[in-house]
Length: 574
Image 1 (cartoon, rainbow, N blue to C red):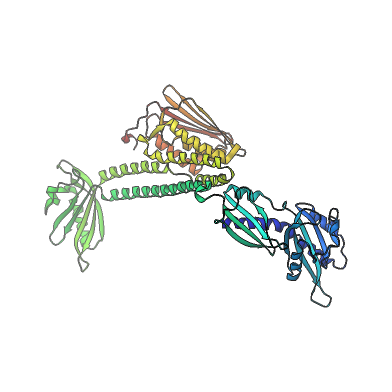
Image 2 (image 1 turned 180 degrees about the vertical axis):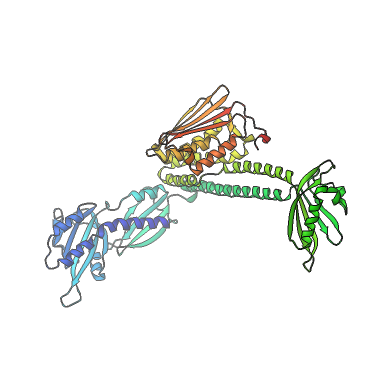
């Protein structure tokens, strides 16, 4: 409510200042022409040619001698602003203070009500110093000068407001402006005092309904929940991707490792880990002399060389050797890393050795990399453009005041869009019905139509809807068509979404008449979006996508889906 009060003052001051500051022009005219006032009508005409200005006047020694326009204001000539009369106390106070004071609203001699700026003028005396010359004044028609538009917005926001003053002539409370509808709710009123051109005005604001009855309150709750939900989602997605990378690094370090310690004094091996079952060396071989039996005869010298390097002071050394696999049937290549374990004096006492199965480590890392790419694609496809997110929230915030019913519709569409993006990760086998995806597409389109208005037209020609597609394949294409095709085009354009059944499956076409693009110069966001779609489609048999575009003509994307969706063998997708 304090914000509303300050906004009312700011609006009022800006309006009044635009007109009452004209008294300074009149003051400058007097100072330059104090001996003989010429061209008053010419100057005054320019100051009254627009807006709610009733008249401007000169009052030498406080008595009105010049007024423009004269027609309708004749009875002001000879009127003493220092005498008794409505609005004159402010004129006397202005003379005493030497500053302009805003008077009114008060009844005008020529009829109606007005607000006037009374500015005392002081000119230089021949012997030095200043002397009072008189008053210049600009009178504004009331209530025309105060536009009701801002007060109408306050009513729409669910508040009641009064702008008032203590009348200098009667000493009573005088309401200057008030909102229509509900009166101030006693007990919940915020009162603020402000000085506008040295006049004291008061503003009282209260909710037109209790907080739990307030429509905007509940809409704000919905927006708050949406915002909290999306922030939590972004944090969760970041954590998931970070966990995937940590898992990858850990697996790359630990998979299929054999770990041992070689004691230089005893000349013995102590094995700590024998790798994965059936992949490392046979545990029964672990002993003082088992190492010679496990290592390939042609690679034994490499082991001796590494041990000698560490003994001579090397901190780390490495090579590749072949070890007998479990079962004693064949050898497997291992990457052999040796590191020193010094005694208290710093001399090499023992050696730590680790051996990683090269082939199996490569296979496992390749599999993990493929899985992480898959999972990252799943997570990234649920991400929502921050630009779209904040523009939508800002639009909802504006519509709450301007068009509450439209705000409710937009919140419903936004919720449907968000729910689908999140649920897409849990879709069974990564598949949804085309009809289900189109519901989310329609929600996204409707949000953008509210924001873009006539600049966006979308035509649906859906001859087929009941078939399965990989989740989030059509929607990103429609998003690209809007963001990179229609929005940049002056005057907007049209998007046509068509779905048909063919002999061997289904075709979905997204055609726009936007700005088009050259594939090799497509934006980063567009390229990433298409890469994700290609990754998603590449997991299923018979799915494909083709894109064609012409600068200035638009873009066409065609998707093909088989009648029965089957995932490809994972070995074929590596």
